Length: 130
Image (cartoon, rainbow, N blue to C red):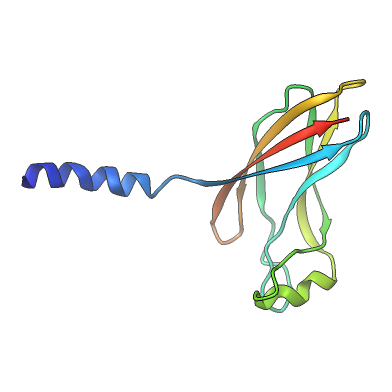
C-alpha cells in the first residue's frame, strides 16, 4: 500500500503545476483590425507593477495577430481595492486581430501571458468575423 501512495504523490503534485486558462469570445467587423485583449498589472495605488509578457501560442487560421504596448482601462470588480483604478487608463500589453481580406466566419487565437509577479495564464479568444 505504501508503494501506491508514493506513486500517487508525484501525479498529484504534477497536476498542480499546469497553467490555468480562460476562454472568451468577441466579434470583429469584416476587413477591420480590432483590439481583442489587454493585459495589465497594477498596484493598489494604480501604479503599474510592470509589463506583462504576451506570447502567441496558437496563430489564427484566417487572419493575423499583433502584440503592442499601449494603454487599457482596467476592469477590476467592486470588491477589489484596485477598483478605483478603473477611472483611468493604465499601461498594458495589447493584442490586436485583423481578419484576412474578405473573410467572414470564425477564427481563434491563443496567447500565453506571464504577469510581472510570475503568475502565468493562457487565454483563448474565439473570434467571429462578420
